[in-house]
Image (cartoon, rainbow, N blue to C red; front, side, top):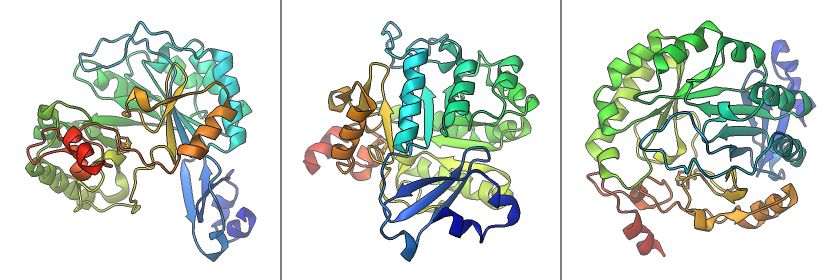
Length: 345
Ligand code: SF4
């Protein structure tokens, strides 16, 4: 099917190394080197069926060099992932049909021989490898060593992780990166100034994260959500495609006035992507309760769990989950997740 489609592409795009990722009734073409996606949908794709999740989010370590007060990880917990077991796992999920892996933790930069691992995944699989980092351990040598071998490095913006220095380094080294930015009420208050600062540092890829959790002070109220919508529309109007503005999937329909590139109903947790813990449990998403995870040993186990659970569409019982009515929030941003879940059970 791909070869038929390629004839219609401009010549420079025909030479990309497209990988097919079948979806239900659609076919996604993905090139890991450029990050380009092409979604095919029509009569020819009506019978296409998904065979694997697109992305696995994998917590490879619990250790971190920072001690952020909001971090929920137990740093004493040992991860079951080792260099070789993780590499074998990547090769097997590649053969299964998974297209991307996104590593987090803990701090992935602390995983042993991390640059070597990234190079080996690139050389021996067709997976696109991404990772999220606090950025403090990145160096020019490391970035040179992995150049062209990863999809994106996502840098988290915290109060104390010296992101100005990190982003300047990323820009200097021509790294492929974006920022993960949690939009709490206090961040919203200074969003315009910080956005301009990030632009000046060279950032062009922004992922705006919604807060998931039980602290009402961190959820946006409806009025604040409207302010965020207005800001996003203003940026989009002024900068258009010069910047990539992304919203995490848990915003759901909270920002109806913001134009979206793709119309999507469900967040896809458990089907389009899976969350893998450091002790080898699989959950629909990172925010799902540990009690609803499934232990697995082999990729065959994982595949069976995905096949039997993928249509469950379970919500994470947490304020801010788009699968809950009104995202499990009251008007003032307070958490009503437990009430909402009781109501839909
Ligand atoms: S299940 Fe809820 S919390 Fe998890 S990714 Fe989907 S919307 Fe977000």
